[in-house]
Structure formats: C-alpha cells, structure tokens
Image (tube, rainbow, N blue to C red; front, side):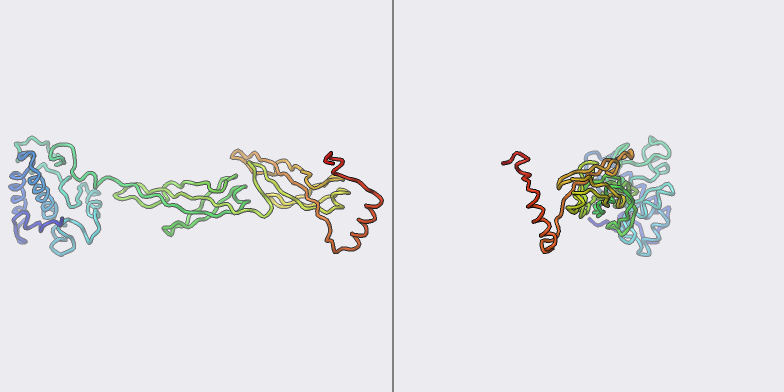
Amino acid sequence: MAMRDPYTVLGVSHTSTDDEIKSAYRNLAKKFHPDVNPGKKDIEQKFKEINAAYDILGDTDKRAKFDRGEMDSGGNERQQQYQQWRSNRSRGAEASGDFADFVAEDIFADLFGGTRARGTRFTGNWGVGEDPFAAAKQRSRGSDIQQALHVSFVEAAMGGRKRVSLPSGKTIEVAVPPGTENGRKLRLKGQGQGGQREGSAGDAIIEIHVEPHPFFTAKGQDIHLELPVTFYEASLGAAVTTPTLEGPVEIKIPKGSNSGTVLRLRGKGIPDPQGARGDQYVKLKVILPDPSDESFTKFAEKWAQNHPYDPRKKAGMV
C-alpha cells in the first residue's frame, strides 16, 4: 500500500515550522499509541503511518528532499530502498520509511510520565524490545553462484592455478588441487552475489570438468598408459620414450616382451595433498608393420617355416 503524504498524515502544512510539526506528532502519537489502544490493529497501522510521516518531516534533510521530489512518501530515494537508512545509520540513526529506531527521549518520556528511559528506542510489537520492521532490516546473505571450469587432464592431476570468469563479470584465480577428479566442486567464500543490507556475500561454486587425455587414464593416484612398440623392439629389447605427466622419459623394453607386458614407473603418478605420488603403469602393445610391406611378409613366411610354434598350445588352450 502506498504511503500517504506525510503532511496530510500529521495534519500540517508545507509552511509549518519544525516545532509545529513536532507538536502535531506528539499529540497524534499520544492519541494513537498502541500501548493505550491494546489489540486494535487499525490503531497500530495508524500509529505506524504517523511515525513514518514524522520520520520524514522530523528530519530536516529528508523533509527538504521530500519537498524537492527527491524522496517519496515512503522515505525511499529514487526507488533505492534502504539507501537513506544505511547512510543515516552511520550517523547513529536509522531510517527506512518506518519509525522503529528514532530516539524518543524528548517525546515518549513525557508522553507517558517519564516511564521510558532517556535515549530509549521505540521498538516494535508495539511494546518493548521488538522492531516491527526487524525482518526487513535483517542482513541478508547473497546467493551462491555456479560456474564450470574446464581443465586439462594434466592440470587436474598435477594441480595448478586457473583463471575463471564469473557470471558477474569478475575474473578470479582458482587453485586446482592435485588429483582433482571430474565433477569436483570447489567453494570460494565470498565470491558470490553481494548481500543485502550489509549482509555477507554468497559463495562461488566452481565445478571442475576434466578433459579426457588421448593417452592417459587415472586409477586413484596411478596413471595408466598403453604404449605401442615394434615387433623387433619387443623381441630384441630397446630403449624407447614414453609420455608422463611431466613430459617424455626413456624406459627400457625388456627383450622378449609381448603385448600386455606392463612396466612400472615409480613416482610418476598423481601427487596427494602431502606430495606423495602414485606410479605410472605402461602397458606394451606390439604393432606389426603394414601388411603391404612385402619384405616383412617374406621374412615372416620364411621364419615361420623354420621356427614353427603354437602359443595357444603353450598356454594350454588347445
């Protein structure tokens, strides 16, 4: 409901002096105070309206702003609710279009026989100790925001720092812990939406999306890799290069290796929070030359004639 013109509510004119406005308010406040009209909801609303009107006209700055059209009858400056309340609070007064927090030492003390202490605030529930607008004035925490962050497999495994742009337009740096798995969520305190009425900001929830790697897979802290080798590297043994999280390293292929042979590289896996690392397991995969290579085909035919063997029989399958 829109608030009525405060001059109309108090029954004063635009030319009334501060003392005349104060006197009008005192008379109305005494007549319509809920303490002397218990249980009458219409009286409570009337008293609320009276105090809201005096909240504007009893303040020289607010009255001037209202007269210039810079403030509406609800005490709001250009639709910015609570802006005046915030600025006034820093000076020891609160004003948000209500009457909850003005100092009543010069009004209520003599209205009710001095029963209220000097400097007492008029507070809500139309009695002592509660503010009818407390819920509206309570600090409100800002909302959390959600944001996805795409990282490479190696960045997720080894950890690092990444920059991410939030929906608010703000760009922040995120620490990606070592061993981060796909779908992990990181909470950044205070990086969400701002709070209302000086409430704390919400958090930014960053969900990590780990991009798959063309070679590596992770199992716990261990890295697994299938490494192609030639038939002669597997047969004769060789030193070859294999990828790792930190770049290529040289490993030795044992003589007589087969597809499926697994080599272990200690300490080449994913680090844990204390820095201890898992291992990398390299599984060999023997790749034969292209069938169009006639020289190899003739070699294989001749070798097979002179060296027949049956690996399935050796494995007990036939």
